[in-house]
Amino acid sequence: MANLRSTAIVKTDICGYTARVKKLSQSDLSNLLNEHKIFISEISTRNEGSIIKGEGDSFWMVFPSVTAAAMAAIEMQQELRQQQSGKPNDERLAIRVSITLGDVLHQDNDIFGDTVNLTARIESVTPPDEIYLSQAAWLALNKAEVQTSFVKEFSLKGMSEPEKIYKVDQNYKTRIFKNQAITKVDLRGFIAYQEANSIKDVEYLLTNFENFEKNICEEYGGTIRSIVGDSHLLTFPEAHSALAAMECLCENWRLFIHGHKIPCGLSVGVAKGNLYIFRSCTYGKDINIADRLEYLSKIVSPGNHRNSVIVADRIKREVSGSKWEYKLIKIDRNAILDNILDYSQFDFFKENDVYRLLVA
Image 1 (cartoon, rainbow, N blue to C red):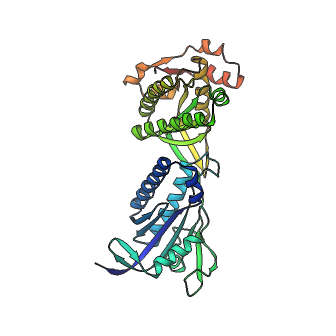
Image 2 (image 1 turned 90 degrees about the vertical axis):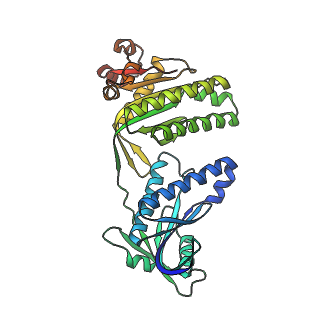
């Protein structure tokens, strides 16, 4: 049954989608679109919105108010930046968002009318990482909640009159993720492997490495914060889940590299602390500790074919009394100090207890 009512409409679009499609296999493209749909749907639902329809890389949503629509759009863009922190701009997924308000015909789970057409026209002139609003949407917006500025008047295709367009001024603030199990994972012997093998072999290795991590993050509630080459930064809400995830990852990875005769084990460092994210930059002193622990894992357990996980004392204290406490072996400080040649690392390990997780 058709009905006409005033509606706040949001349209999203992945920028540079056509160029990205050419570089992806059918399987990778399908995974990308599925993950993106889940991402858009979850944020819309959290802000009382709902998806009306999806068109590959584009989605149409309706919201109870323009302010709710704008808050959802801001969250989408900031979450997307956070998820891809560390990626270069040419690899980063970016979306543009248009928001309008007007009388819309709702029929057969679809929407029709001039406002719908206007939404598409505004989206076509919206730059990557921006949120543009029609004048009607801007007038209805709660200005105390969302900061905006005037862009200019646009003569849009199919529109009889020029449209005044406004944009959301996004104030990027540092996001703090407290008390995380910060996990640095690195491939051993990767430089030697890439020099001795074809690009196809290297791509196969890196693809499987990322897929293994995605799977353990989904199972144990982790998040991949950044990927730089063969070095990955992950976080988990608790030490228990981080250790369970690393145990599972190391076991699965051992089977994979042995089966394919790839001499690239894992070096892992797990620290506990705070993570800071500003736009696409991830930083914090506790990341540096995870780096130091990952460095030590190569010294404690040398050999490119091996997996090694070293954890900080804060992780050990958090799992005290659990099964994980008995899987953590304290490392003899004097033994490791004799093998550390980097004096910036030397002082840290001289003052801090560290432990080795028993893994395959």
